[in-house]
Image (tube, rainbow, N blue to C red; front, top):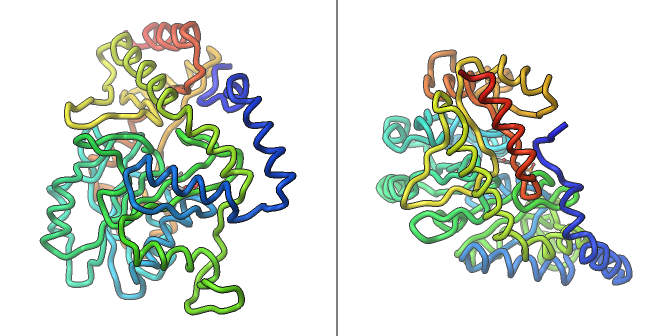
Length: 364
Ligand SMILES: *Cc1c(COP(=O)(O)O)cnc(C)c1O
């Protein structure tokens, strides 16, 4: 079976330095918020072009802490996309605020800036922008709206580490950027981990406290926080993998290029724009007979996946928001037609050959 990702395959390249660094951490006696975590915070901040990095437990907590740090809660509204992983909107409800959805653009699958203004009310406090699949949203347009209406901007960059928009990497366009290092992400740990980046010192200091029970000094608590700290093993693993990130992202874009060139023209493929890069956390095609194609691939030993089959406005958990089918046509069409193909840095030419020829045999 050709899988969607091959995490064990990476160990053939990274195994030695990872085993070595794991042993170092084990023998250091320091397992949470230690030297490795600090180094990773600095390196990720540097990599993304932000002033500060704060290591946290996972990407969901990063988003939750971002909202908390911006004082968003009861009575507030936060605008976001309905075509994303559940966590993006879950945290908005989690802090007591109301998620307000805006449809996506064709092709990029990201929030459509031309549809944001009509959803802004006197209660709107922020926009959570998702850079889905490794493709950036239209940040200039979004930042312009945020400025006009005095809204905070949080980037959910969980799928887009390293993606560039007008020459600058995602994460520090808005007030706060959030990253996930879930194992299958483009930069993945071997467990849960996440990172927040920001250019604002006040937010940095506040989030450092919020992730650690609202405490700066042990047993002195100045605010209500949570426990969401980065552990040293994950930080150490990520420090090794960060060195290979750009090589791995390049490999992803090479694989994507070949899919785009060689897959049947009847399939809708991800567009590339001259003012931004695409790091292909996922390579997704659109095809009306998506389910039949997925089954055919499976029968031929090839995995595929649907991100995401049910848009957030149609999730049972958000019934109370009273959305209905038809509210976001672009999102709903994408959810019905989208199919993600295997893409990972260690994928061989032969494996991709098999995927391409199998798809082209089905799509005529
Ligand atoms: C993975 C992901 C998250 C959540 O990250 P976790 O580390 O799994 O909590 C949030 N948003 C998006 C867009 C993601 O892809």
